[in-house]
Image (cartoon, rainbow, N blue to C red; front, top):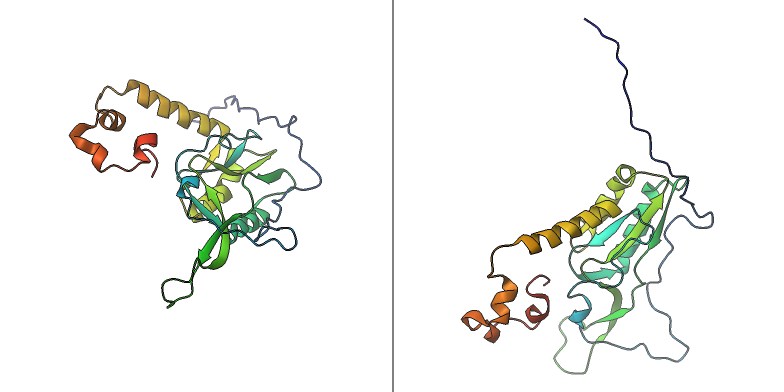
Length: 222
C-alpha cells in the first residue's frame, strides 16, 4: 500500500557572507632556498630539535574559520612536501567556489650533510637542503569558500595522509570538539597517579632517567 507523505528537508547552508578573493585562489609557490643579501654567506644551524618538540602556541586556530590540516605531531617539511600540497590543491580544489592559504613559512632551517665515505673531522658539512619545522597542533594550510566540509574532506585527508608526520583534516567544529574532549578527559580523570604526578614527585627515582622534555610536557609530546 502506497501512502503519499510530506517530507521536510533541511535547508542548504547559506554562504552569502563568504567572499572569495579574485586575485589568487590557489596556494602560492614557496621558495626552495631562502634569499640572502649579496655577499652574505648562508648560515648553518645545529639540529635545534626544540623547534619541533612541544605544542604550537600561536598558529593553532583556523583564521578563515572553515577547514584545514592540523599536525598531530612535530616534524619537518621539505620543499618536496610543500610542492606536493600545492599541486594536490591545484588539481583537486574547485577554484570557482573555494580558495586556500598557507599557514606555514617557506623552508628556512638549513640541514647540512657530509659526503658518503668521508673521514671524521674537517668541520661541519655543506648545506644540503632547507626545511620548515612544524610543532604539534600547528595549522599547515586552510581551505575556505562556498562549500561544505564533505566537499573539501577527500583531498584534505589525502594530503594529510602523505605528510611525513601524523596530520588530520579538520573543520572548525571538529577542532573545537576535539579540544573540549581533551579538556573533559583531563578534568574527569579520577586516577591521581598521572604521568605528571609521577614526575613531579620523583616516584621510583624517575628524575634519573627521564628526558628533559618530559619535565615540560609531561610525556605528551615526543
